[in-house]
Length: 308
Image 1 (cartoon, helix red, strand yellow):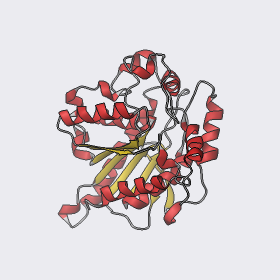
Image 2 (cartoon, rainbow, N blue to C red):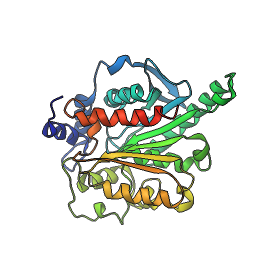
Image 3 (cartoon, rainbow, N blue to C red):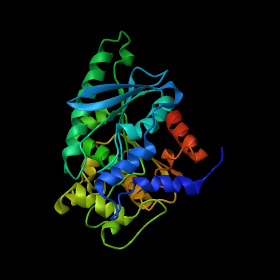
Image 4 (cartoon, rainbow, N blue to C red):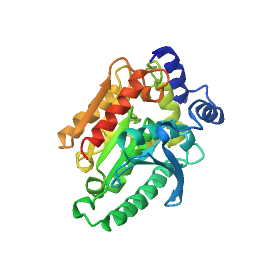
């Protein structure tokens, strides 16, 4: 496959909500560039409602009946949708041999924090209950516990972490693993990205993080662990399941991921930090330009299916 890092970077920059973007135009650019009519690998897309929230349910040709992923899309808290993440999540469903549920949750600035988290929590509670009920009818007692994966990228990774905080003790027992792509982990007042200094990589910069934070939540809320998981207590993090983080080595967010990994390890939570050399923010969503995108997703699939 021909590699075109420059074209990939141009596409991925559309995920960054900068000071020059208007909300409607930002959303339109994402939909135009990432939406697709045809899904890869014969993955089937159905529409379902969980807890009052409409969702895609992406079903590959071959999947484990006990494994299901709840995927929370990125988009800087203000953009993205089931449509624009459908192709990426369909690839995840195929390689992981599992169904993937993608909710259409409320977005900022119309709906401020914690609206998106409330929507995702409603989906998660109903999804978990349904999966437990379905597997309770299985004759095989060893197959009665569902393998539920919570996943998200960028700002969606922040929401995924907030979900686990709200689940409390049940997060450790009900969730098998937390999967994060290029996560946003600290938008607090102490973050160097929020200080006013310009910090940037090829795709995303501090201006995007500040702008997104400004439209997502009140300033006082940004220091809360539900937005900045690096501010969570050891007790809160100890309730997390194992965590898998995948990102590129060029990302300005890598230092936060390393700090998060250290904090998790310190409270006895397994964290795998999978860093791809020379790759930018969310390189996995530029699979038409980067062979590494395919290889990285395949690695995720092997990670989950190896435990079956």
